[in-house]
Image 1: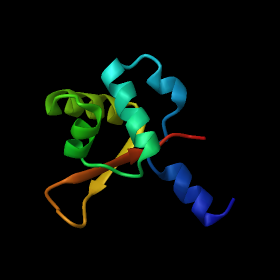
Image 2 (image 1 turned 120 degrees about the vertical axis):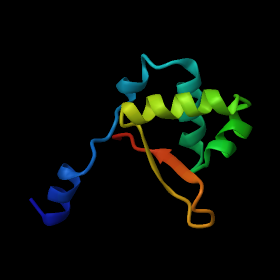
Image 3 (image 1 turned 180 degrees about the vertical axis):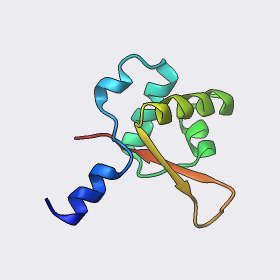
Length: 89
């Protein structure tokens, strides 16, 4: 086992497509949008999905609980977070 493999095992677990199955439709829609885009902010997701920002925030929290998404600070605006998929292939 290489050092990078050991690091990946210690890192936060990755979600699977099965983890998404029982989530609400809003969370599934957010996943589909993120599947076609690299990383998006909460507002970009709300604009793309036509869902209210509160619904998108709820979906993101549910997805984060299932380890299906990653979030990181935006380099262009540190007040915002970028979300991307974290699903095992």
